[in-house]
Amino acid sequence: MKVLVADDDKEIVELLSIYLHNEGYDVIKAYDGKEALSKLRTTNDIELLLLDIMMPVMDGMQVVKELRKESQIPIIMLTAKTTDMDKIKGLVAGADDYVTKPFNPLEVMARVKSLLRRTKMHIAEDQPDILEIQSLIINKDSHEVKTVDGKEIQLTALEFGILYLLASHPNRVFSADEIFERVWKQESIVSAKTVMVHVSHLRDKIEEATDGEKVIQTVWGVGYKIDAK
Image (cartoon, rainbow, N blue to C red; front, side, top):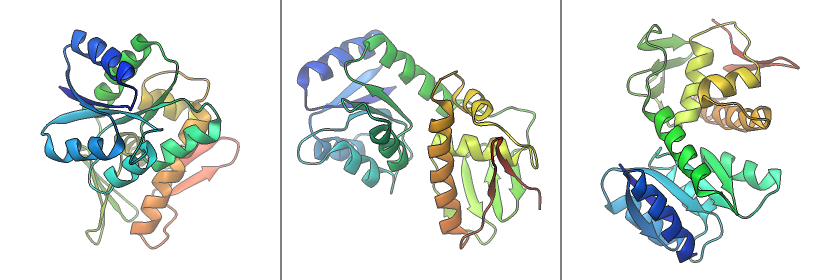
């Protein structure tokens, strides 16, 4: 698998490259946002992007916004900013995960493996390949979501996982912790906030494609659900 590492700090790029090589990944390197975007567009089979936020020419947030117009490649953001709002902005822009600097390279490797595993894995085999719920058609195998009138909705791997989980259990309310554990496949003390951001972004995409249809319902103080209508 190929991983693109984009950071203007060459020492960080080299450090992550060593660890990624040791885990069997091929590494593509970029040192500013514009170069990262160019390499993503011209290099075949890049499976994941490790992306610094603060870079020259084009920063990481701009890269994510541009990239999400054309690709759903998994993205882990590397950020020296530590406030919750900075992390939320990255997730809303379309990132799948983030690591705060200074970081332990072993933690980054664990997150890379986890995100790639989530992206590649099939959701429970006992669920139907295609779900139709309200105005949405959800294809498990291709990870495609369309409206009944054929409009495609581009989702990240995590957004698709949340949607499929809720749609495959209509009327059932899932707490943020349950969603995090079943979609992210890990436990986290920030799960509720992280899930909230992804659900908000998912809702925006669905409402834009369906002229404002409220597919995902919030059950205040409990969690989220999709009604079987």
